[in-house]
Image (tube, rainbow, N blue to C red; front, side):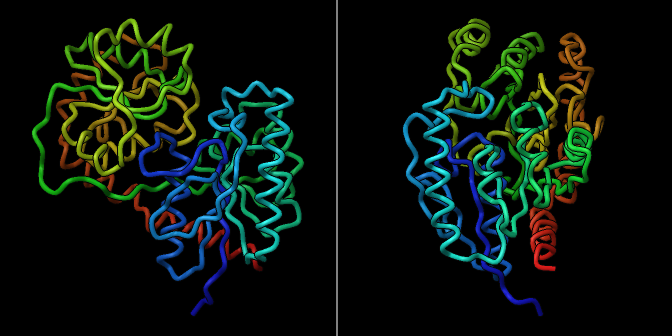
Length: 351
């Protein structure tokens, strides 16, 4: 019988944690924290002030307004932003080191978070691919164990760093409504609204396939939205991020979920959640999406950039058996199995 651990979970500090946000890395760390607590561990999440995770203790960290919403893919690396981020993580680590946790599960994709954990029993989970030279350099200097969220992303990081990076594939809780729901002529795009997510392409493909585009999420890149998304979206509005149970009901009604990603998707939590709701995923064959979406079973994937094939794939995906999609997803994306993988990796830090 294993003794319970005192586990610190470090969240990104650029936005408070909540159930109604569009960031897969935040959802995963919250699910993981709850799962570890259910397995008997004492869990504390260190997160931006204003965070709420029902059932899990939060150590709130005050964050300067210059850091909030300055997401890593948009960050300008201005000196005042860097100084504010450093102060926030300094405050976090001052509290964390005082609590003397057994192990740390670290999820912030920031140089300050990587460096601040030096000498601690920590597992860094990298939620993004090795796409920024400054972060690759910071992670290369790190001597602590590294993990990431898919086998594809682990291979990319291992190649970039010249060292092993553990693959701990994401899981997802099942929020699907009981019973089958009537499917509507909706093509759903969910998550952050940004170029790498291909939101504009999703809107155009939905219209070309005769479906109503529906975007649920937060505008991550305002310039991209105004220039590329708003014109084809027309009179339709963006729906604000919603609780995951509500999003699952919407996915259960949607004809397809569209993911024409323009980057190497590290996992694609939306794709897993859509399949759990029985909704086929249509997207580009990039990054870890082929690992998450079995082509012809959980949806249809086409070559990246082929918008004509994307439109055709929407029609093909609508013919798939939605009950079979859900049954496969229940096995493939077990959250309990995901928690067990992380727990084993954290226990390994004590050996």
